[in-house]
Amino acid sequence: MFNTMSNHILQPDTQAILLLCASFGQNRQTEPLPLTLSEYNLLTEWLRENQMRPADLLQKTAREKIQKTTINKLNLDRLIALLERGLMLSLAVEKWTSHGLWILGRGDSKYPKRLKQILKHSSPAIIYGVGNVELLSLGGLAIVGSRDVDEEMIQYTQRVAKTCSQQNIQVISGGARGIDQESMLGILNNGGTSVGVLADSLTKAAVNSKYRSAIREGRLALISSYDPDAGFNTGNAMGRNKYIYSLADYALVVKSDLEKGGTWNGAVEALSKIKEIPVFVNMISPIAEGNQELYNRGAKPFPSEFENTNLREVLIKEVVDSEPSKTATMVDNNNNIAPDFKNISKDWYEDFLRLILDYLHQPKSPKDIETYCKSNTGLISGQIKVWLTRAMDENKVIKTKIKNRVMYKVHPSVNQLSLL
Image (cartoon, rainbow, N blue to C red):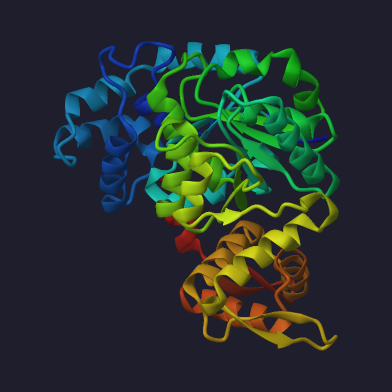
């Protein structure tokens, strides 16, 4: 049975974050004003300094402590008023869960680690969602593009989505009319899985007939960092773009306008700030002006013959070939050419680290790690051991013994930093 979190129990940390940051369906200008993400991050600095978690703010003693201190220029009366919205919280949560929605705070164990590892404090304090929460950790190909596109672009998008389905590559997109929606429906209609990162109206989308069966079958998760009942807002649409890219392994811009629109802004932001995620553009003639300029700014051409290839391998090869300074090659015991990163590039190591930290949320044996890394990265045994040792040296991973078996797991300090 897939994990819809239908029996969702709100964690104490998440309750506190909701009280502080959620609007509960009201206008965000309604007093007391919910904390913005940057304001919440200021509060988390104070919590860390005082060795506290968000849940501690639910206690009366913590509120008394707040009244006697200064918290990074935050208005203390406002904080107290936000924390006293218990009735509003219970009514809102009852409404959301009745629609099948679940809620994750940044300290929740099921919160997608990819967001925190790539975006750090820019990751949303709260995620609202419906469907299979496990899909948020699977990565895949982000497919984005303009709302207004012709039939040729729609068919191209559907072909890419179908290929992803056939090769077990998940599609992540924004759910908006046009390329985003076509890419999601394209893979769902071919039996694949998808994550939709919505800017508005999550409650309506959760019961939309287009998505109902895929949600029920565990093949779709729809999420939003905004109130589930919020209407469309251009700022929200721009703001969620980085979440689409950060949940993916690669991104494809099918069609972008030049220097305007959400697709353009999201791609430029990804190229300049989210460098862990390779951005590809459709360069099949006629090439859109926006696509050409994104290519000029560092995006890579998406393979034109994608349907007759191992797409994942081709995308990796495109990245490696376009940046030869990152890697040399070496031959493993089976005479297969594999990456050798003895002159270790930070970007490649960070990719490995993000993957392994996500995997080691439960202790794993050396053999489990080797099998997992080989199947997901193509790295050879020696390089996996080198980077695992480096992760231990950096206090990201620890080696332990469980029932006399050597096991590896995430270092407690990493989990502690992620709680807020």
